View 1 (cartoon, helix red, strand yellow):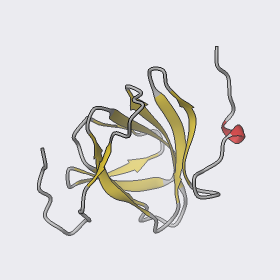
View 2 (cartoon, rainbow, N blue to C red; view 1 turned 90 degrees about the horizontal axis):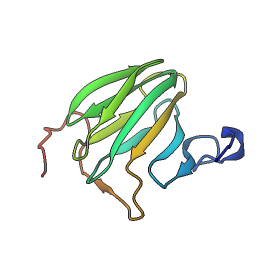
View 3 (cartoon, helix red, strand yellow; view 1 turned 120 degrees about the vertical axis):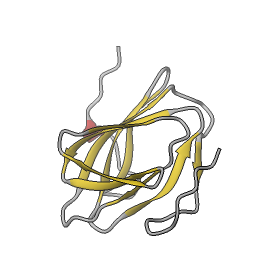
View 4 (cartoon, helix red, strand yellow; view 1 turned 30 degrees about the vertical axis):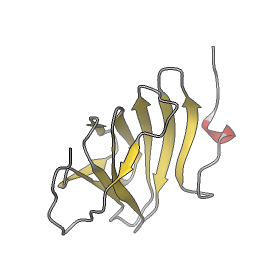
Length: 124
């Protein structure tokens, strides 16, 4: 058994960014806060799927260049190879649970030089 509380973990950037509640053996799970105006660079995962359950606020997510706005209660799955870019275009914090599966010891993120307004070209 493993029991923890969100308050026992720290965000990467003080009061925002990701914080992991667990990593491994089968899944990584955490909470992310994206502040108004904040952007998270475009990236994909080679072998992991990453999903998000929106808890508070809203956030624009570009999946392979297509804009989706996540709002409270929405659940989004990004399959391995699907590029995703986050930008909080609202005036309130966005908070979501994120899940990466399967758990991998090695880093699985590949960053892509892309921002909204540019033509998106799917990379293999």
